[in-house]
Structure formats: structure tokens, C-alpha cells
Amino acid sequence: MDTIRNFTIIAHIDHGKSTLADRMLEATASIEKRLMRDQVLDDMELERERGITIKMRPARMVWRDSAKGTDYTLNLIDTPGHIDFAYEVSRALRAVEGAVLLVDSTQGVQAQTLTVLTMAREAGLVIIPALSKIDSPNARIEEVRLEVAKLLDCDPSSILSVSGKTGEGVERLLEEIVERVPAPSADIASETFRSLVFDFQYSNHRGVIVYVRILDGTVQKGDQLTFKIAGNKFTANEVGIFAPEEKSVLVLGPGSIGYIVTGIKEPGVVSVGDTVASVRDTHEPYPGYATPRPVVWASVYPESQDDFRELKVALERLKLSDSSLSFEEESSSTLGRGFRCGLLGMLHLEIVSERLRREFNLELIITTPSITYHVEEKNGKKSIVYSPALFPEYGDVVHVEEPWVHLTLIAPSEYIGLMMKFLYEHEAVLLTSESFGDNRTSLSLEMPLRELMRNFFDEVKSVTSGYGSIAYDIIGMRDADVVRLDVLVAEEVVPAFTRVVAHRRVEEEAERIVEKLYKSLPRQQFATKIQGRALGRILSSQSLSALRKDVTGYLYGGDITRKMKLLEKQKKGKKKLKARGKVHISQDVFMKVMRGE
Image 1 (cartoon, rainbow, N blue to C red):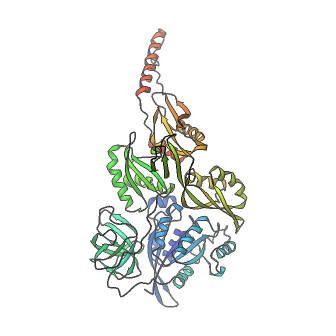
Image 2: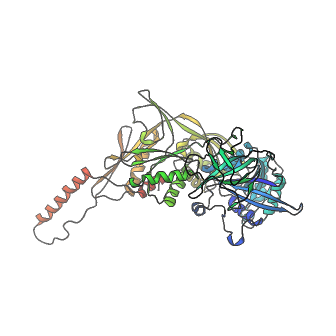
Image 3: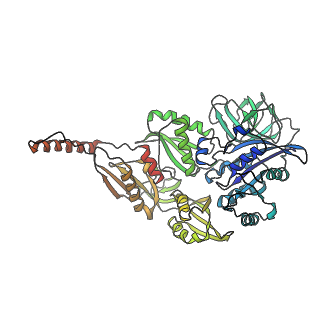
């Protein structure tokens, strides 16, 4: 175990984690040159398209210390940077002893840098600071070095410099990982095997494959094992390492990071944070991970109710590779049967919906995302409302509470004046303001979580010309002044568009969504009213004129009464359609309204 080093790379989004991992794999010759590509550890199609990491990914490398003549096994876990996937980062931190804190030398310390640093310190990890993108003409290496040194209270000379593009400084970083990160500690002599599950994936042929950090003992193919919390027993069909592709080995020893093929194909058995141990082990389960709490809720319905079963199977399969996703069945009078999904943020919702479409070929209707409200009604009933469609009518509510967040926002000082008006509109309360490094200001704020979902991130980027960065965490429930806003199309409520909005902004929101639908909805065979209703009355209304066929086009000359009869007949038909007709709203329209396009 003295030659094992387990570490992760942590950073703000887009600071170069995956590119640095590529250069490490090259420097250690872990991948053949002909197989090398950009973002080699991001093997999901969506990750490569968007240029972001969504799932953590382990990789094993062998680094030879020429001075000592010793080969070291380096187990790297590449982590996501986006705030929605902070739960992935927290799990990776529990499986390693050290973390490379990467800071972009063109941008400096950002909000998520502070968040991941706090998480790494709480996990008791050795922190190795490094500046990335030093080859960029916009790099401010010395300024950012002092900024990081102040943040970590360390000697500036201990901060390394690397380029994920050219590979400069990567070998030095690997040497420092060997020197600074401690070897894992475990009971080598233990006769029983114990390990912590930090992730898992599902294979149609092999069942659930658990990713484990081995704590004590050894494991090999054919061993009889058990999930200590779930209580299920199984035989290890294969054990292996990530090199970086899965590679079977004879034995996994203490301190290692690897995988075990369980053969289990039932959903719900395996959970992140469970302890996998030999059946002879008598110890208590290892302290696992806190269950992730959903931040955003959205209902997902199949466009055709014939696909309901396929949607259920798809969500169960997706949960096997995304433990932070939760869902429960629900039904709607207009949309049929579907599922209420709990997610970690708006990006998480986009990723889940896109994966359902691409990987399972499903056409979906996704409702407007919402948060959780604690509601007390006049009849004394108290309830937790996850769906805007279930929020009580205006006049029935006595008291409402909603979640608030503590938010850190870092931006260049010249934009702070513009930010103040924008933050007021989003109901933010400024706690403190602090200037640091390169004429930037860090704002500490509190605001309703509801406001974060109202295009807050995009607007921050717009107001700060792309230089603003955000990190947040939920701090609890507080009183809320909110009401339910319904959208009626052809005088019928569309539950997918129902939302809970601030009382003071309900008229503005009603006008906005009606206008958006008016522009997005195709014209029907009959005149269609689009209305926004709240506070017990209609607040906004527009009429979409009917498609009108020229029923007199084939006539020429003759008596005008023939034309009049045909037009009157068409008018009566339109009237009947208006009374009986229903409007089909396509998935494209739902997505446009959800994204605010």
C-alpha cells in the first residue's frame, strides 16, 4: 500500500480538470497514443457535446519515480465542476486521501472553487494547489498565485503551474502527488474484506457494477459478498481496475479503487454509501453518504400513454447510473400517467430529459420545474407541495414557507452597481461584500431558491459580461408571499404550465407566459383563447385567430348568396369546434416555454 496514491481533481466549472486528466494519462502512458482523444474520461455523448463532466470517472495510472526507482499506482477520480453535480464531488472525496485544487490562471478563484475547497477540507484531504492554462496569453500567473496563496494561507512557491493543453508542469505535478498525498491506511492483515461503494453503473449483461474503495482485506472473483445495509448476498463475478477502461484483475487489495461485478439486475438493491463486505464480516457498515436532497421538482409524462411502461423502465435504469435522481408515479387529468422527478438543479433536469430522449428514444412532456413549499390552509390542513398544480387556490392559503439559499457571487468590481438592481429584482438580501484579488468583489447573499430558477444564472452571466460566478447551498425554510398562476388554453387549464410565483410579480408573469404561448402555439382550426389566471381572476388574455380555409376559392361569378352560404356554414363549424375542440400542445412548445426562449 505504500506505493498507492488516491486523489481527485477539483475545481470551478471549465477550469480544465478533464484536460489535465488527459495529459496525466498521456504522461503515464496509460492510454495508447492512437486511442487518445480530448476529454477521454468523458465517455457520455452529452459530456462531449457540452464540454462538461457530468459523471465522476475513476482512472488508474502507473507513475515511475526515476529518482527512487519505484513504480507508484495513482488512482485518479475526475469530478464534475457544475454546482448541480456537487454530490458527485462529495462522493469522490470520501474515496481518496488528496485533492488537486485547480484554479484557472486567466480567471482566478471563482465561487465554486470556494465550495469544493470547503468540501475537501471537511473530508480531511491533503490539498495540492495548481494553476491551469498557464500557456494562455491572458494568464495572470503571479496575481492568481498570490490570490490562491492567500485563500489557502500557504507559501506561493508551493503552488504548482500546469498546462492541460501543452502538458507543461504535469510531470512535476505527478511527482508532488506522490510526495504530498499520503498512502492509504487499512488493515492489511484483516481476514475479512470491507469496501465502500462510491458509485455504480448498470450493464444489461452483467447487472450492477459497483465502484468501490477497498478499506480492509482483499477480494477476488468467486468471493461470497454482501451489501451490509441492503442485506443482499451475491457472488463476485469479476473484479477489476479502471485503466482507464475496465480491466479485470485476479485480486483487489486494501487501499485500492476498483470495481466488482455483482450480477444483480433488480433495481433498488444497490445504493451509494453501502458497505460491500465478505459474508463472514461482523463489523457494522461503514458510515456512508447523506442521501442527496432534491432541489428542483418536475413532472415527466410520455407524449403517448402507450410509452408509460417504457418511461418507468428508463427512469429505473437511469437511476442505476445517477443515484441523485428520485421519482414517484403521479397522474394528471390532461396529461395522463407520468412521474414526479426530484433533481439537483436545472442543468440536472436538462441532462436527465436529454438522456431519456437519446438513450431510450422517448418523446416527453416536461412540466415547469418547481421547488417544495410548506403550506397551511384555512381548514387547518398542513401539507408539503411538490407540484404547482397541487398548490391550493388563492383564498384557501393561510401561511406558506419556501426554501432559501446562501449564495456566493464573485464578479469584477465595475459590475457591482449593475448587479444591485438585478439582485433586488430577484429578492436577494445582501449580507457582506468583500474585495479581493484583481479588482474583484465577493458578495454573500441570501435569497429564495425559487428565484434561482428564474433564469438567474443566465442573467448573472449577461449582467457581468460572462465574468460572474456563483455557488450556493440551501439554508432552510422561510415565510413566502407566493400565489398559484394557472394557464388556460381554450378555457382548459394546462397543468404543465401551472407555476407558483411571487405575489408582487404575478401580473407581469401572467402577461409574459401568455405572450410566450401566443407566439409559440400554432394556430388551430378554431379561435383559441390563451389566459393567465391567479388571485381568483383572469390577469392576462390573448386570442389566437383560427386557421381559415378559403371555402369560396373554387367559385367564380354567379350569385353572391352561394358564397355567403358557404362562409356561414364555415362559421358554424368553427363555433362547434370551439365548443368541443381540444388543443394539442407539442413537446417543442413546452420546452420553449420552460426555457423562456
